[in-house]
Image (cartoon, rainbow, N blue to C red; front, side, top):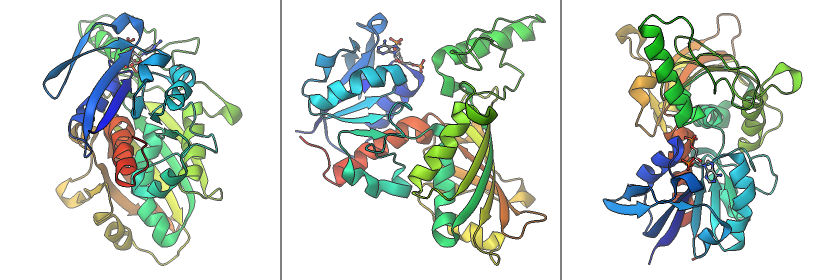
Length: 347
Ligand code: A2P
Protein backbone atom coordinates (compact mmCIF):
# COMPACT_ATOMS: atom_id res chain seq x y z
CA UNK A 1 0.00 0.00 0.00
CA UNK A 2 1.03 3.55 -0.74
CA UNK A 3 1.95 5.24 -3.97
CA UNK A 4 4.50 4.21 -6.57
CA UNK A 5 6.57 7.30 -7.36
CA UNK A 6 8.93 8.33 -10.13
CA UNK A 7 11.37 11.26 -10.08
CA UNK A 8 12.51 12.32 -13.55
CA UNK A 9 15.79 14.22 -13.45
CA UNK A 10 16.67 12.57 -10.14
CA UNK A 11 20.39 13.32 -10.52
CA UNK A 12 19.91 17.07 -11.07
CA UNK A 13 19.96 20.07 -8.73
CA UNK A 14 16.17 20.03 -8.26
CA UNK A 15 15.77 16.22 -8.51
CA UNK A 16 18.22 15.73 -5.63
CA UNK A 17 16.06 18.03 -3.47
CA UNK A 18 12.86 16.29 -4.63
CA UNK A 19 14.27 13.05 -3.23
CA UNK A 20 15.02 14.76 0.11
CA UNK A 21 11.52 16.30 0.25
CA UNK A 22 9.92 12.93 -0.56
CA UNK A 23 11.80 11.35 2.34
CA UNK A 24 9.80 13.58 4.69
CA UNK A 25 6.54 13.70 2.69
CA UNK A 26 3.15 13.37 4.33
CA UNK A 27 1.75 10.50 2.26
CA UNK A 28 2.42 6.77 2.04
CA UNK A 29 5.11 5.72 -0.44
CA UNK A 30 5.23 2.11 -1.64
CA UNK A 31 8.18 2.50 -4.01
CA UNK A 32 10.36 5.07 -5.77
CA UNK A 33 11.92 5.05 -9.20
CA UNK A 34 14.75 7.44 -10.02
CA UNK A 35 14.94 8.34 -13.69
CA UNK A 36 17.50 10.42 -15.58
CA UNK A 37 19.37 10.27 -18.89
CA UNK A 38 21.02 7.13 -20.21
CA UNK A 39 24.34 8.56 -18.96
CA UNK A 40 23.25 8.13 -15.34
CA UNK A 41 21.64 4.70 -15.67
CA UNK A 42 23.18 2.36 -13.10
CA UNK A 43 24.24 5.16 -10.74
CA UNK A 44 23.10 4.45 -7.18
CA UNK A 45 21.19 7.03 -5.10
CA UNK A 46 19.73 6.61 -1.66
CA UNK A 47 16.14 6.91 -0.42
CA UNK A 48 15.39 6.50 3.29
CA UNK A 49 18.71 4.68 3.69
CA UNK A 50 17.95 2.24 0.87
CA UNK A 51 19.93 2.10 -2.37
CA UNK A 52 17.98 2.91 -5.51
CA UNK A 53 19.52 2.45 -8.95
CA UNK A 54 18.95 5.23 -11.49
CA UNK A 55 17.18 4.11 -14.67
CA UNK A 56 16.95 5.63 -18.12
CA UNK A 57 13.76 7.65 -18.77
CA UNK A 58 11.56 5.70 -21.21
CA UNK A 59 7.76 5.60 -21.72
CA UNK A 60 7.55 2.15 -20.16
CA UNK A 61 9.38 3.29 -17.03
CA UNK A 62 6.06 4.90 -16.00
CA UNK A 63 4.14 1.61 -15.98
CA UNK A 64 2.45 1.29 -12.56
CA UNK A 65 3.57 4.76 -11.39
CA UNK A 66 0.96 6.84 -9.48
CA UNK A 67 2.88 10.12 -9.12
CA UNK A 68 5.69 11.31 -11.42
CA UNK A 69 7.71 14.40 -10.50
CA UNK A 70 9.49 15.88 -13.54
CA UNK A 71 12.52 18.15 -13.42
CA UNK A 72 14.74 17.27 -16.36
CA UNK A 73 14.06 20.24 -18.62
CA UNK A 74 11.10 21.24 -20.76
CA UNK A 75 11.92 19.01 -23.71
CA UNK A 76 11.98 15.87 -21.53
CA UNK A 77 8.61 16.86 -20.02
CA UNK A 78 7.16 17.39 -23.49
CA UNK A 79 8.51 14.01 -24.54
CA UNK A 80 7.44 11.93 -21.54
CA UNK A 81 4.75 13.63 -19.40
CA UNK A 82 1.87 12.47 -21.59
CA UNK A 83 3.36 8.95 -21.74
CA UNK A 84 3.27 8.90 -17.93
CA UNK A 85 -0.35 10.15 -17.86
CA UNK A 86 -1.35 7.54 -20.46
CA UNK A 87 -0.08 4.90 -18.04
CA UNK A 88 -2.19 6.28 -15.18
CA UNK A 89 0.25 8.61 -13.43
CA UNK A 90 -0.37 12.13 -12.16
CA UNK A 91 2.51 14.28 -13.41
CA UNK A 92 3.80 17.22 -11.35
CA UNK A 93 5.99 19.09 -13.79
CA UNK A 94 8.63 21.54 -12.62
CA UNK A 95 9.46 22.85 -16.12
CA UNK A 96 7.77 25.59 -18.14
CA UNK A 97 6.48 23.07 -20.73
CA UNK A 98 2.79 23.10 -19.71
CA UNK A 99 2.46 26.05 -17.32
CA UNK A 100 0.37 28.25 -19.58
CA UNK A 101 -1.75 25.41 -21.00
CA UNK A 102 -5.32 26.31 -19.97
CA UNK A 103 -6.09 22.66 -19.18
CA UNK A 104 -3.15 22.43 -16.76
CA UNK A 105 -3.48 23.79 -13.19
CA UNK A 106 -0.52 25.99 -12.17
CA UNK A 107 -0.39 25.64 -8.44
CA UNK A 108 1.10 27.20 -5.34
CA UNK A 109 -0.80 25.33 -2.59
CA UNK A 110 -0.93 28.37 -0.25
CA UNK A 111 -2.64 30.35 -3.03
CA UNK A 112 -4.73 28.18 -5.36
CA UNK A 113 -4.82 24.60 -4.11
CA UNK A 114 -8.46 24.43 -5.27
CA UNK A 115 -7.31 24.54 -8.92
CA UNK A 116 -6.02 20.96 -8.48
CA UNK A 117 -9.56 19.60 -8.53
CA UNK A 118 -9.76 20.09 -12.31
CA UNK A 119 -6.49 18.39 -13.20
CA UNK A 120 -6.37 16.16 -16.25
CA UNK A 121 -3.19 14.30 -15.36
CA UNK A 122 -0.61 17.08 -15.55
CA UNK A 123 -0.08 19.76 -12.89
CA UNK A 124 2.51 22.47 -13.41
CA UNK A 125 4.83 23.81 -10.76
CA UNK A 126 5.36 27.55 -11.37
CA UNK A 127 8.67 29.27 -11.99
CA UNK A 128 10.82 29.53 -8.85
CA UNK A 129 10.75 33.34 -8.76
CA UNK A 130 6.99 33.42 -9.26
CA UNK A 131 6.27 30.97 -6.44
CA UNK A 132 7.93 32.92 -3.62
CA UNK A 133 6.37 36.17 -4.87
CA UNK A 134 2.90 34.53 -4.81
CA UNK A 135 3.36 33.25 -1.25
CA UNK A 136 4.32 36.75 -0.06
CA UNK A 137 1.69 38.71 -2.00
CA UNK A 138 -1.44 36.51 -1.83
CA UNK A 139 -2.36 37.53 1.76
CA UNK A 140 -2.12 41.18 0.69
CA UNK A 141 -4.09 40.60 -2.54
CA UNK A 142 -6.84 38.81 -0.61
CA UNK A 143 -7.24 41.70 1.81
CA UNK A 144 -6.73 44.76 -0.38
CA UNK A 145 -6.52 43.67 -4.03
CA UNK A 146 -3.38 44.24 -6.12
CA UNK A 147 -3.18 46.92 -8.75
CA UNK A 148 0.45 46.57 -9.83
CA UNK A 149 3.66 44.65 -9.13
CA UNK A 150 7.16 45.71 -10.20
CA UNK A 151 9.76 43.13 -9.24
CA UNK A 152 13.53 42.86 -9.60
CA UNK A 153 15.09 39.50 -8.83
CA UNK A 154 18.50 38.46 -7.55
CA UNK A 155 18.55 34.80 -8.58
CA UNK A 156 20.90 32.05 -7.43
CA UNK A 157 22.98 29.94 -9.80
CA UNK A 158 21.55 26.58 -8.63
CA UNK A 159 18.40 27.50 -10.56
CA UNK A 160 20.44 26.96 -13.73
CA UNK A 161 21.45 23.43 -12.67
CA UNK A 162 24.45 21.50 -11.42
CA UNK A 163 26.69 22.36 -14.37
CA UNK A 164 26.16 26.12 -13.90
CA UNK A 165 27.15 25.78 -10.23
CA UNK A 166 30.31 23.93 -11.21
CA UNK A 167 31.15 26.61 -13.75
CA UNK A 168 30.72 29.38 -11.15
CA UNK A 169 33.04 27.58 -8.72
CA UNK A 170 35.71 27.09 -11.42
CA UNK A 171 35.49 30.77 -12.37
CA UNK A 172 35.74 31.89 -8.75
CA UNK A 173 38.79 29.68 -8.15
CA UNK A 174 40.50 31.01 -11.29
CA UNK A 175 39.80 34.64 -10.38
CA UNK A 176 41.04 34.15 -6.81
CA UNK A 177 44.44 32.95 -8.02
CA UNK A 178 44.80 36.05 -10.17
CA UNK A 179 43.60 34.88 -13.59
CA UNK A 180 41.91 37.68 -15.52
CA UNK A 181 40.22 35.62 -18.24
CA UNK A 182 37.88 32.81 -17.16
CA UNK A 183 35.93 30.31 -19.24
CA UNK A 184 32.13 30.77 -19.49
CA UNK A 185 30.06 28.26 -21.44
CA UNK A 186 26.65 28.08 -19.72
CA UNK A 187 25.32 31.34 -18.26
CA UNK A 188 23.42 33.55 -18.78
CA UNK A 189 21.58 30.98 -20.85
CA UNK A 190 22.74 27.74 -22.46
CA UNK A 191 20.54 28.31 -25.51
CA UNK A 192 21.91 31.77 -26.34
CA UNK A 193 25.06 32.59 -28.31
CA UNK A 194 27.22 34.51 -25.88
CA UNK A 195 28.29 33.42 -22.40
CA UNK A 196 29.66 35.56 -19.58
CA UNK A 197 31.25 34.74 -16.22
CA UNK A 198 28.87 34.73 -13.26
CA UNK A 199 31.57 34.70 -10.55
CA UNK A 200 31.91 38.19 -9.00
CA UNK A 201 29.39 39.44 -11.56
CA UNK A 202 25.65 40.07 -12.14
CA UNK A 203 23.91 39.04 -15.37
CA UNK A 204 20.66 40.82 -16.34
CA UNK A 205 19.55 37.94 -18.55
CA UNK A 206 17.81 34.72 -17.44
CA UNK A 207 16.55 32.61 -20.37
CA UNK A 208 16.36 33.99 -23.94
CA UNK A 209 15.11 37.43 -24.91
CA UNK A 210 11.49 37.63 -26.04
CA UNK A 211 8.84 40.26 -26.79
CA UNK A 212 9.33 43.87 -25.77
CA UNK A 213 12.95 43.41 -24.66
CA UNK A 214 11.87 41.20 -21.74
CA UNK A 215 13.37 37.75 -21.24
CA UNK A 216 11.27 34.60 -21.06
CA UNK A 217 12.02 34.41 -17.31
CA UNK A 218 10.51 37.90 -16.93
CA UNK A 219 7.46 36.96 -19.03
CA UNK A 220 7.01 33.83 -16.87
CA UNK A 221 6.68 36.04 -13.78
CA UNK A 222 4.14 38.23 -15.58
CA UNK A 223 1.95 35.51 -17.09
CA UNK A 224 2.16 32.99 -14.25
CA UNK A 225 1.19 35.62 -11.65
CA UNK A 226 -2.03 36.38 -13.55
CA UNK A 227 -2.86 32.68 -13.93
CA UNK A 228 -2.14 31.71 -10.30
CA UNK A 229 -3.98 34.72 -8.84
CA UNK A 230 -6.71 34.22 -11.47
CA UNK A 231 -6.72 37.93 -12.31
CA UNK A 232 -5.63 39.29 -15.69
CA UNK A 233 -5.97 42.89 -14.55
CA UNK A 234 -2.97 42.89 -12.18
CA UNK A 235 -0.18 44.89 -13.83
CA UNK A 236 3.13 43.04 -13.55
CA UNK A 237 6.59 43.75 -14.87
CA UNK A 238 9.86 42.11 -13.93
CA UNK A 239 13.63 42.42 -14.26
CA UNK A 240 15.38 39.09 -13.63
CA UNK A 241 19.06 39.09 -12.71
CA UNK A 242 21.41 36.19 -11.96
CA UNK A 243 23.89 36.81 -9.14
CA UNK A 244 26.74 34.64 -7.83
CA UNK A 245 24.79 33.10 -4.96
CA UNK A 246 24.65 29.28 -4.75
CA UNK A 247 21.02 28.90 -3.60
CA UNK A 248 18.26 31.23 -2.46
CA UNK A 249 16.48 33.70 -4.73
CA UNK A 250 15.91 37.26 -3.49
CA UNK A 251 13.39 39.75 -4.84
CA UNK A 252 12.85 43.46 -4.41
CA UNK A 253 9.10 43.85 -4.91
CA UNK A 254 7.16 47.10 -5.37
CA UNK A 255 3.41 46.64 -5.09
CA UNK A 256 0.41 48.92 -5.29
CA UNK A 257 -2.74 47.88 -3.49
CA UNK A 258 -6.33 48.99 -4.14
CA UNK A 259 -6.60 50.74 -0.78
CA UNK A 260 -5.29 54.15 0.26
CA UNK A 261 -5.51 53.73 4.02
CA UNK A 262 -3.36 50.64 4.68
CA UNK A 263 -0.16 51.06 6.71
CA UNK A 264 3.05 49.08 6.97
CA UNK A 265 1.72 47.70 10.27
CA UNK A 266 -1.42 46.44 8.45
CA UNK A 267 0.72 44.68 5.81
CA UNK A 268 2.92 43.12 8.51
CA UNK A 269 -0.16 41.92 10.40
CA UNK A 270 -1.35 40.13 7.25
CA UNK A 271 2.01 38.42 6.71
CA UNK A 272 2.87 37.42 10.26
CA UNK A 273 0.40 34.51 10.28
CA UNK A 274 0.25 33.84 6.54
CA UNK A 275 0.78 30.24 5.38
CA UNK A 276 4.33 29.59 4.20
CA UNK A 277 5.55 33.06 5.21
CA UNK A 278 8.11 33.97 7.86
CA UNK A 279 8.23 37.69 8.61
CA UNK A 280 11.76 38.87 9.42
CA UNK A 281 11.47 42.61 9.61
CA UNK A 282 13.26 44.39 12.45
CA UNK A 283 15.50 47.02 10.87
CA UNK A 284 16.51 48.34 14.30
CA UNK A 285 18.00 44.92 15.00
CA UNK A 286 19.29 44.43 11.44
CA UNK A 287 16.84 41.58 11.06
CA UNK A 288 15.93 40.87 7.40
CA UNK A 289 16.00 37.81 5.12
CA UNK A 290 19.15 36.72 3.26
CA UNK A 291 19.58 33.83 0.80
CA UNK A 292 22.31 32.17 2.87
CA UNK A 293 19.99 31.98 5.87
CA UNK A 294 17.06 30.71 3.76
CA UNK A 295 18.88 27.70 2.29
CA UNK A 296 17.38 24.41 3.45
CA UNK A 297 14.15 26.04 4.67
CA UNK A 298 10.72 25.54 3.13
CA UNK A 299 9.36 29.00 4.01
CA UNK A 300 9.32 32.29 2.11
CA UNK A 301 10.98 35.03 4.16
CA UNK A 302 9.75 38.64 3.98
CA UNK A 303 11.35 41.78 5.35
CA UNK A 304 12.23 45.44 4.64
CA UNK A 305 8.54 46.36 4.29
CA UNK A 306 8.26 50.09 3.63
CA UNK A 307 5.65 52.46 2.33
CA UNK A 308 6.67 54.16 -0.92
CA UNK A 309 7.95 57.69 -0.37
CA UNK A 310 5.56 59.22 -2.92
CA UNK A 311 2.76 56.75 -3.56
CA UNK A 312 0.38 56.21 -0.65
CA UNK A 313 -0.88 52.80 -1.76
CA UNK A 314 2.63 51.67 -2.81
CA UNK A 315 4.86 49.40 -0.71
CA UNK A 316 8.32 47.86 -1.06
CA UNK A 317 9.49 44.57 0.34
CA UNK A 318 12.37 42.08 0.17
CA UNK A 319 11.38 38.44 -0.34
CA UNK A 320 13.76 35.48 -0.10
CA UNK A 321 13.29 31.72 -0.44
CA UNK A 322 15.32 28.62 -1.26
CA UNK A 323 14.77 28.32 -5.02
CA UNK A 324 15.43 24.58 -4.97
CA UNK A 325 12.87 24.00 -2.17
CA UNK A 326 9.79 26.29 -2.22
CA UNK A 327 10.83 27.40 -5.71
CA UNK A 328 10.92 23.83 -7.00
CA UNK A 329 11.19 20.54 -5.07
CA UNK A 330 9.18 21.46 -1.97
CA UNK A 331 6.35 23.11 -3.93
CA UNK A 332 6.14 19.97 -6.11
CA UNK A 333 6.03 17.60 -3.14
CA UNK A 334 3.56 19.94 -1.39
CA UNK A 335 1.32 19.63 -4.50
CA UNK A 336 1.57 15.84 -4.16
CA UNK A 337 0.58 16.15 -0.48
CA UNK A 338 -2.43 18.26 -1.48
CA UNK A 339 -3.45 15.77 -4.19
CA UNK A 340 -3.28 12.98 -1.62
CA UNK A 341 -5.25 14.92 0.99
CA UNK A 342 -7.91 15.89 -1.57
CA UNK A 343 -8.11 12.33 -2.87
CA UNK A 344 -7.12 13.35 -6.41
CA UNK A 345 -4.64 10.56 -7.19
CA UNK A 346 -5.84 7.36 -8.85
CA UNK A 347 -4.32 4.31 -7.19
P1 A2P B 1 21.71 13.27 -16.09
O1 A2P B 1 22.38 13.53 -14.79
O2 A2P B 1 21.66 11.82 -16.44
O3 A2P B 1 22.20 14.15 -17.23
P2 A2P B 1 20.26 19.97 -13.75
O4 A2P B 1 19.06 20.86 -13.83
O5 A2P B 1 20.91 19.99 -12.42
O6 A2P B 1 21.22 20.24 -14.87
O7 A2P B 1 19.70 18.47 -13.93
C1 A2P B 1 19.06 18.04 -15.09
C2 A2P B 1 18.45 16.66 -14.86
O8 A2P B 1 17.81 16.26 -16.08
C3 A2P B 1 19.48 15.58 -14.55
O9 A2P B 1 18.91 14.65 -13.65
C4 A2P B 1 19.70 14.96 -15.90
O10 A2P B 1 20.14 13.63 -15.87
C5 A2P B 1 18.29 15.00 -16.45
N1 A2P B 1 18.33 14.83 -17.92
C6 A2P B 1 19.06 15.51 -18.82
N2 A2P B 1 18.86 15.04 -20.07
C7 A2P B 1 17.99 14.01 -19.95
C8 A2P B 1 17.39 13.08 -20.88
N3 A2P B 1 17.66 13.12 -22.18
N4 A2P B 1 16.53 12.15 -20.39
C9 A2P B 1 16.25 12.11 -19.07
N5 A2P B 1 16.79 12.93 -18.16
C10 A2P B 1 17.65 13.87 -18.59
